[in-house]
Length: 372
Image (cartoon, rainbow, N blue to C red; front, top):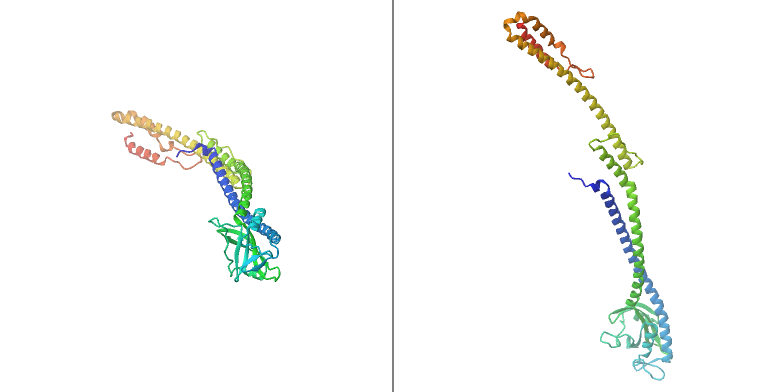
């Protein structure tokens, strides 16, 4: 199997570990940033609604004050709100327009007619471009109950398709104190949202920029730590294995265990394995020398046997002269005597060439009948 040299050098492992840790940190920051952004926007919107309510609380006071200045001593007459000079509010939108322009809110005036509150003047326009007048408050709504009770009422309301935060305040007749109508001011919730979102986006950009810097620092720090704590010990093991796997490998080198963790355990067991391999190599070398020595002695014995056999063969060809060669035959038998062929191992084990010696002994017995 082909091995990637870059992986052997540890680059691949360091890159993968850095990538995994960096992605994990990035995802953690992303999740935390999302939660923080959501919480920030939610809290800002809640705060903006509270601030909006505080603003329109002051605006309704300004509206009431301006209405008293323009229309003195309001009363209900013939189904219309009029001042003591008889001027009707139903045909005059100057006050609501002034409030809308000066305070940045929408204003409206209601008349209480036949047990209902009808809008007779407003700065709000509908989709057709006309003022959104002649609409009624729902008699089952909380705002209707508050107006009939003579109390201010805050709520979110949809007017001409837009959501507003509004405050309503009842109007009382100058002479009788009778509830004759109501006034209201409101702010578009979308306008508040735009301000909040714009400010929130600026904060988000700052947060994300800071998070990116922190992420880069964490990646760099994590890479250095991984290299020192994990990759460097692994590289040491790889280099040691590379050294021992070479053709003239050195089995005497050992790793230095500098920690009590898994890296230290790897170094300890590597050294233990190398010690056992070294002892095994020493035993193999010793046994090899012993086998070579036995082989040499066995070869010498075989040479002697071959020479003896040659002499026997020569004597058989000269059968007519057996008496003349009887002494040589006797000498030959003495040469190949089983007692002269011995082979023992270096550790004092039993003789290892017993079968050969038995065969030679049988051969001697077979040929002894030729002796004179």
